[in-house]
Amino acid sequence: MVSVAVSEVEIDASNLSLREVNAKIREAVGRGLRVHLKNASHIYGLAAGLKSGDIVIDGDAGDYLAMLNGGAKITVNGNAGDYVADGAWSGEVIVKGCVGYGASMYAYGGVLVVYGDAGDAVGQILKGATVIVNGCAGDSIGLYMVGGDIIIVGDAGKLVGDWMIRGCIYVGGKYESLGNNAKEAELTDDDIKKLSNLFNKYNVKADPSKFKKIVPLSLRPFYG
Image 1: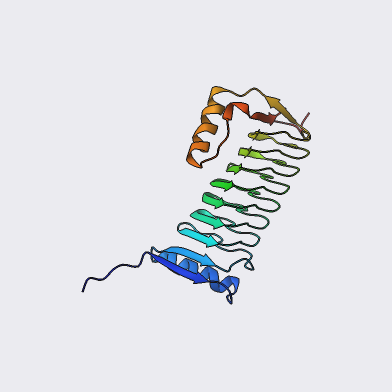
Image 2: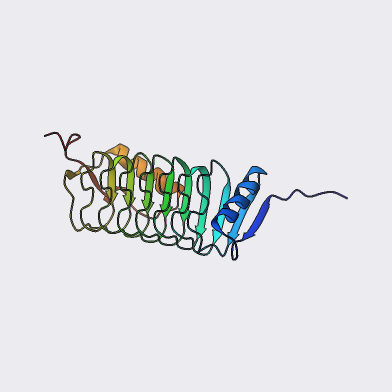
């Protein structure tokens, strides 16, 4: 008899607590297994702090999904709540639906891709991550960001780039207003190449040359 190695494990989170679900995820990742989760919309803080692993969530996920992500790939075949990828360091978070408030807040690295819409406060205090929203986003995108890239394929709300210090914001549609210390700048060939590579990798159907680029007006806005 030939034994077949199991490469994937399914976890039903229906009656599990946050501690129990995350313990099961960590155990499976430690064994080199791909994790398939279902019925996890009530779990806040799901898959937090992982340094590796391939996690697939069927249905919706709650708030603080993939916070402090350190290298895992996490895919949500549904919507996610507030503060997705909060404080992430690396890895990849893919949300096939929409996300709520504060996506990728404080994120130092990694990639978040949202194929639907995002709420307010995308990439606030962003440190260096890449955030792609394939739909529209709300107000106060990139507030106090100090690095990284925020890409909104659709429209954006008010105060885009408010008090941003470093990094770039790209908007494919319209925005309602720019924030303090934010200005439009001309797209460069490097910008177009960067966007093209990301769009090809994540199957985003958009023309990079049509995007508006938003950058800081000053790198020292609080010092005169």
